[in-house]
Length: 271
Length: 257
Image 1 (cartoon, helix red, strand yellow):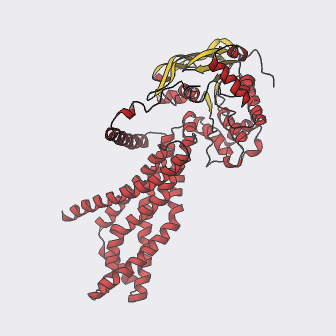
Image 2: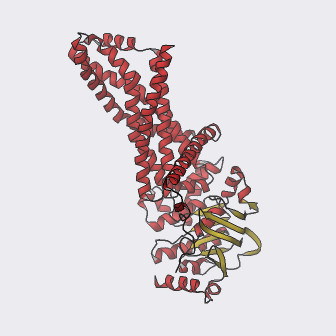
Image 3: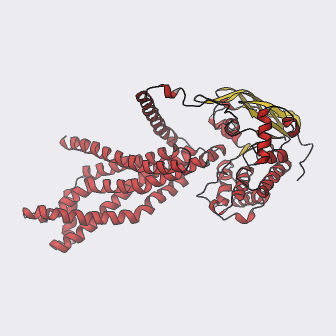
């Protein structure tokens, strides 16, 4: 029996390829803008999903601690070890704690935390929401008079936005411990001397910019994961794509944001 | 199971659809649908895959918006409702999804509690527990209360999906392909459950299916979607008493399968 309906792409295929691609790009940009602006509208309006936010904060924060501890600790050791020869050439190994402090607080800790979270948390959110989308769980929430955007997206984005700065502070601490062990083993620097040099090298602007940057990274990771999952196409392939592109897109955006933050902080220092 | 009789109130239209149109790009799915569903009735919507059966019930519950036409549910025009009003209406309309749509990160108890705790204020823990246990008893699956959805069979998941919608005691039930992918015995159990819901809860139901056994067992009236419109409506025998090739093909292929 012949199909009773018209094929959807008949008219679309008449358009040139470039035009169709441009249409898709602008449509995607519009969808992203609408998705992000909806967050700012929904986050202020009751009911507030306090329990779900705390649960997600636990999922994002507590469950990433193991991985963050390991990578932070290794980052501290490796960076210290790699920096030593350069400083040794000028007989300046005593500056190691200061150098490490600046590198870790200003760049390494926020970046390492955000990249680890992009891989672990971003893919989790993308896959979870993607799976909920294709199995109609999001629709089921909507028909049971629950706002799925507020319950699923707002809670996850808030959780990542606040968990990533917390994890960044933790990464700074763990990397500092790793660096101290290395410095202590090689230069026999005492803990009080190390701490004095470490904190003496950083300014309030360093810490402040690092925290603000981490909030932005957290928001980006949560928002990208939710957007990709929420808009995943039908089928298990769509879920895989959502998880994968959540990681790739959020990592890419984290680097772009790092670059922008660098310019802004440099401008602030010059003032 | 014999269908209950004398439960339909033909003077009380609970769903009224007029001139409903819905397209996706150039794909014209619904092309002017008119339909009345009466209080207490089980209406079966038949049609081939892709003819817009599921689209129709998603429009009724406001998951999709129509391009043209009106949908009146329990006296309210769905397309003109505010978000809050639509949510209030949705509490009176249960929707059983084809895929069951159980929240797979929650236990069966949490799945059933979810609509209740979010929509009914000031319920004690005992009242919530009682409502969950009653809903599970309704579908004969009390023993699954602490299991995860992934531990259940397809038929059990369907029943739990129905139990989750029944917990809010809806006036209207919408079933999307309730027997799809199930063996004949489990399908028969689901058909019986749909009839029990009609009898016990006095609910009005729309059952979307292409399974003629399900249609015959559960439907008081059948409506067949052909070319985006309901071209045939009536009892099972009335709908198929035609020489229309499209209808006859649907009938024969269904039983051959």
